[in-house]
Amino acid sequence: MATSSLLPMNPWLWSHALGETFAAGFDPLGVGIAQRDERLAQLLGAALSGSPFYRQRYPRRGDAPRLDRFAPVSKAELMHHFDDWATDREIQRAGVEPFIHDAQRIGDPYLGRYLVWTSSGTTGEPGIFVQDALSLAAFDALDTLRLQHLAAPAQPWPMWGQRQRFAFVAATGGHFAGVVSFERLRRIAASTPPPLLWLAPQLQTFSVLQPLSALADELRAFAPTVLVTYPSCADALAQAQAEGRLDLSLSQVWVGGEQLSAEQRDRIRSAFGCTLRNNYGASEFYAMACECAEGTLHLNHDWVILEAVDRQMRPVPPGEASHSVLLTNLANRVQPLIRYRLGDSVRFLAERCACGSAFPAIEVQGRADHTLHLHDARGREVPLLPLALSTVIEEEAGVTRFQLLCLSPTRLELRFEAEVAETKAAFQRVQAVLAAYLATHGLPDVKIEHGSEPPLRHPRSGKLERVRLAEGARPAGG
Image (cartoon, rainbow, N blue to C red; front, side, top):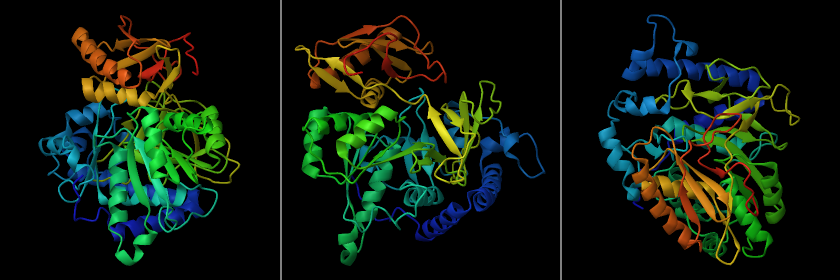
């Protein structure tokens, strides 16, 4: 990867965001709400003054802008109007596209002052998100002060000063949010002055797309003290650890990007014998909620607003699972996200968490895919991670609106949404790349069938799970 001479952080903004986030932690319903309201006013003002897209959509002029007067917006709509979206008018798709298609520029500053990352398109529409210095400072502050857990004082900077070795296992090869963020942290650590270099952590990224046996070999060689990955991957590695095929000595496991089940939590903790940290985030906002010591997710509502809504975009009361959520990112003023339809099903808990935190407690539903357990020619189980399968199909076959169903340990069915044109050609592309991927995992005989039915939707959230078990299917280990 290319190394930039620009330090990818603003020290003044970083210290200011850290101080405000620390203060909000003492009085979430007082200081935090005051900070939220001030940031919201600044965000709405910046959007209406600098973004042609939001100026055109806002129905009223001359009065103080209000959040509820902004109509909800989708990712597809923002991508369609990309050149009118940003408040910095230099940000144009013609310039961003070549940048994000160059894998050598992962972690480099775009236009000398921004980071850019892309979503994986898990809801069918990939996104391009530009992060300004304030966004990065806010994400750093939230990770520093709340990732450890909300119920106890955090260490000044959990990565530094403990000689930690961080292994980040994720989909690599693209400008994905986690990969870009981790590369930025790696560069910050590498830029530490020589007298203090011994304090800096070591950070290394590993591909989740490779066979688990190869990943285990690489992790053993690196010997991390902290594992950062998706719940499904951590669960698969925990099984390898329990079976004596991994032998890692970890102080912490950090997971995010997927829903963490109670069963996964128990298996990961049991296998590695260490603390497990869970968080809820997305490409649109990297750290929406952090987990407390009670295992409850608490919304960082001083930096992000989540509105739980039903199918008609009407608010739902606490205790009721939403059909979707509307996200307003209070940190990013260069590419505003105001009442953005995220698609997750979230339930705000009516009761206060036992940890004592006043930050709103939430449950996230409908984000979990199933790790598939297929059989090779000798009947042995081979686990495959859903994110790895989705990434192969999306990145190598260029198909985003699909669903891969596991019918049995030796049969997969690929379904397409109605919007996909020329499904026969799309199926042939996916079949070719997926067959090659399965062969690398010792599964050349698994059948891939072209399904005629539409994809199955989550029964509660209506969200499309792109990799899942077929109804009634119970592959071994699943």
